[in-house]
Image 1 (tube, rainbow, N blue to C red):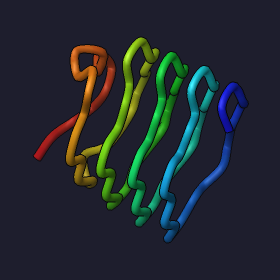
Image 2: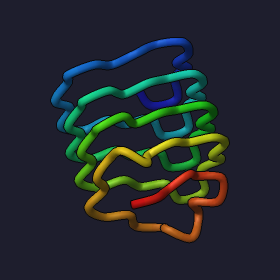
Image 3: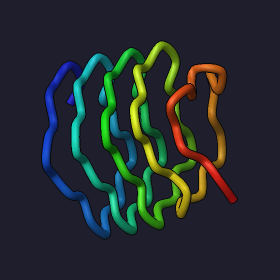
Image 4: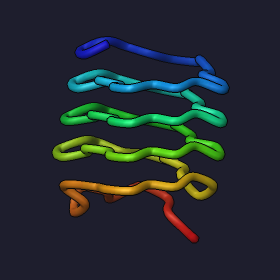
Amino acid sequence: MSSSALSDITFQNCKIDSLNVRFSKCRNVIFKNCIIDDLDAYQAALTNVEFLNCTINKIQVSDAKLNNIDMRSSTVQAIPGITFLKGAILSN
């Protein structure tokens, strides 16, 4: 899905080995009860994206533009480029 546009879509109960949204624009996207092994959002523009009760083993967000990203109910194992998480909502 690299360099694509996603909007107003929900992914539910999915097992995704590699989710490549590099250079993509994602708006109003929900991932619910998903397992994502590798999420690559390098230079992506993500707005109003929710990860609800998901497990994300690795997420790459270097140079991404993040606005209203909600990962509060999800588990994230590794975040290379963590300094680029400005705009993300994270909590225990």
